[in-house]
Length: 352
Image 1 (cartoon, rainbow, N blue to C red):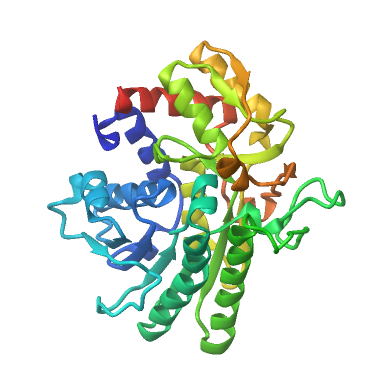
Image 2: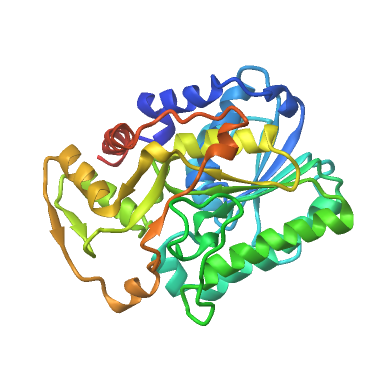
């Protein structure tokens, strides 16, 4: 079964569609989205296409490197005049012409440990060179709003002076490491957005995502939370590769995407917004436990290999303060336990 054929997943899409947002801002408009087949981008597009069936009439240009992956993921869009896939590596200059593009959302990025350690140059260039290419395109085509997807990673290490990170906090990052490529390049991407706002008057907003999980995850995702969920789907023991004391903010993809729409449609130009719900802050060992309880299995401990460990975050406490986003009216749908249970249920339908 394809994910989009799952009634459980479609209920998630419908839940986002029913949120009270100024959807009319997208009516008759066009948007270009990178990372279209990724965890957040694919769900975002599913929502747009659902709203299109309700007369939104929003044109989606889905950009990615793999036409095969996109063709499979968005097969249901094949006959829609409001969907077009563009095969392109954003690290290369953008030479295609689309006419007017009202919104650009840059969601493409390596987002898991093996990708960080296996493709560190690609990780950095996507967040800097790719971002710059898209910003140039946005200025040239008079884009109404540019959205740069950032991350909890930009806050670095908690220096012990804050229980939660608000949007003004910045902790320590040792830039002279392989693992620093992701957070440092995300920081630089944000700075580029502010530079284009200053020099060209470009309208930019920056959603900063917590650790996102959900049924749109890639099966190749090596994040600990994703591996826990995949083990639960398979009915296997959950493998924990540390003591599990790391204390993080997690967000179900439904809430991440509803937060993204909120920032896109209601955020103030130039501002960054944490997308996180304090009720889904949890220690890694407890995330593992919830997955094991859902699967009826147990948690076991293992040591990661050198390559995998090189991509792991060293942060032990990274909780986001989501009050700024909540001030725009955003509210989460999923509590952490409920979100894990439904994710596993959907993936069992899709994978098996």
